Image (cartoon, rainbow, N blue to C red; front, side, top):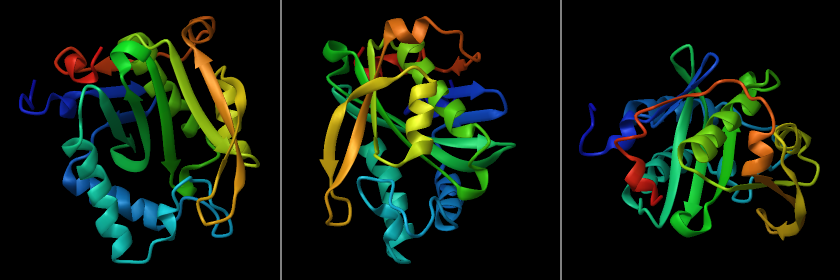
Length: 213
């Protein structure tokens, strides 16, 4: 263990050429630069909270604050694991896994973003696979949930390809206009019923108790 004061820094997921782990502050700055270059077309908003619309320097400052907040607010009863996604040693996006009352509910949710230049290559599916492996195989989750705006075919396509099924609809208004979003649900049985690419999970033993499981 190299970070006994915060062992989550030693947690690392590897799938194919990708590595998912907590970023250092310097890497958060690199990740911010990737996000600033573009995450989605300017005429679209795939997120429930429109963080990509913020002007500089608010964008950069609040981007860093977001990552610091996940560490500062961590609680076994309510946590958000915001992992940076690295390819060839460089950050290209972010994949989050979150839960409340995980010890009782055994349910996780996920969210992610990927730099525009790295989309369309199967990276989104691989990084979601990595955190689902952490959830189901590493932490013993029973259910994984996610959602996407109707029309966000890339996100919904990843969910369906990984075995999620539709779980109803909701309405969100990230920019003040109500929009339909579809909910998706994946059970442990469905996860285990399909062969998946191997995911190496490193450093979990030292921080397992932090997840409340």
